[in-house]
Length: 378
View 1: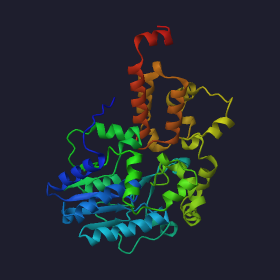
View 2 (view 1 turned 135 degrees about the vertical axis):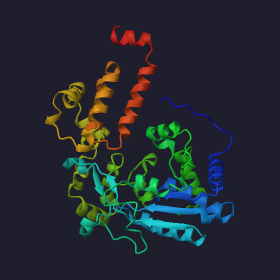
View 3 (view 1 turned 120 degrees about the vertical axis):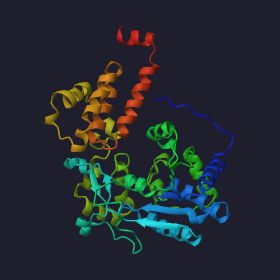
View 4 (view 1 turned 90 degrees about the vertical axis):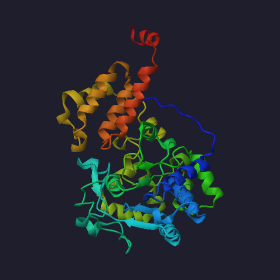
């Protein structure tokens, strides 16, 4: 789906304030997703300032922090401080440490793609203990691993509107998701149009309280656009796990206790095992060519039983087959490499599938008849 952008006259900060005030003007409960990441903090800061200036009602607000167990120490410390700030202005701040399902590409190595945070059966391996005030049980989570945190939040916020600090500049998947929203009234994205520069400028100008780990990661060489604090084990964030050992050894030890396979990330984080590639890796592999079309054909159509494919991925094999059939005529070896790496790395939420499908669809639309004749001899 091609996305058309329409630009307004307000700056992004004023636009975010307007969206938030419009949400509160409905008089319904407002739930704000808080993660202590930079985007979430910018949105939280705007909401906090609007409460202090008496432009919105704090009694309507419930701040939701889904604690994913494995967090940097400075993230936790910042979350504690922000909890106190919101409580001090009369808002409710709920800290959840629930046994919900999370995506883990490390588990992919053992033919599974999910793990359970705060799993009651693995208390001895928890990376740390929940805060004493945390909510550890909830009727909306019927049993450990029954749902992921997104489903839990959907159930929890049914009677109101949820504010989410998601930005389309972060990925094509997010841009597509926002663009497809028609009459959505339950989830609002106040800072969806902010760029990375907008976020960091706001943090600097407001002298915003944010986790120190951002500075440590930047000092380690992480480029500014890749400074993200999210679940360590997701497909798009697994490469960041290699920095934990360097920046926070105690957390790394806790991760290794929880995940015996975690050390493999340090060795192969930039390989197709984890769907990544660096210049150094490409230089090492220079001269090694693969026929990725043949590989994809073998995996999807001829001999899938010869490959270790996680059960969650097997359920989507028909979708991947359809993608190849739809776009085979336009696909190069590089496109087939994309299919191979994304399929073999696992894609339980179909994010990679949707992004690749959109990319190939646009590629097909942009190839004129003349170019097709020249390229394919038609």
